[in-house]
Image (cartoon, rainbow, N blue to C red):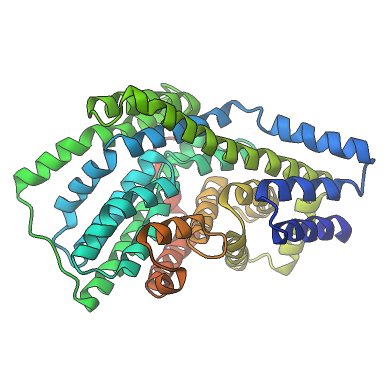
Length: 431
């Protein structure tokens, strides 16, 4: 096994990160330094630039800026309030009612908007003050908001699952989208159980029971927003359009819906488009840099070498899955989700296939691992958003976060070792 390329890649990446270099440039520069070992200077520079450009030359990637735009339209279009009112009629009377409302609303909002940060921002801004007014500790509200917002990255439509499809060499996006439903809902249920037990122990208040009329009214108000999921996923599964075409349909639908709700005006579109462009540029630059690193690793046979190391440690499926989960949990602490998926998918996929794990199941396992990373310091972007909106500190949020982390890890263990949780729906639809 050739250690020099691996050492240069890992050490240079962490040195650049330690110097405060943006993640995308740290990935690209460490990739270039690694390839300098094998090819001349000018060829190395041009090859990295070329691989960054060709890495974005994919029709499937067009779905990402479209879903980001539809998420921005959802955030500004009055969707969150309607989802919250619907969730309130369902679980408001249970222990920790407002916390459960936060979890259900964040799951629905995250799924519709396709963004954990958008969900954390919307739910934290709307429900955070209301929870505090009702006597909930702001740290508890922030912890619930932070963890539940990541579920939208598993429940489709999900940009991260599209990125995984690209990194894995073409795993069906429709199969990944269908596979995300049960794991996302299961994890959300575990979060709700922990949140309810914590709230009951602390004696937090509950809401009054809703009448059937209130339930139906809130459901009808939320139905047009929820219908987007049916259009997007139903259209893809039925074969009416691809994931990319579905993302464009989502933009058109959310724009019309926001205007019908009179929450989006023509003058708001310039700001929405600008915010979407900024977010898309950041995500696509990360993808471009990560694709160059993936190519460098492939050129230097790094995935094959690391796969051999893992398989030499053990050929037991249970042990290998546990080891991969531990590595991904560690990676998620220090690396953002998109580059982590693009870099580690080619490394672990050969191992996963060799022990008979379906790539669709592994995609969900990987994304859930990295969702947990989004809630952990020092790089957890959703953690920082949730803490900032709640106007508290990371140190104070850690205590109520820990039992919610345990709930997510228990769900991860079930999804890892019981593949039918992930694969049942795709198999039912013939994927």
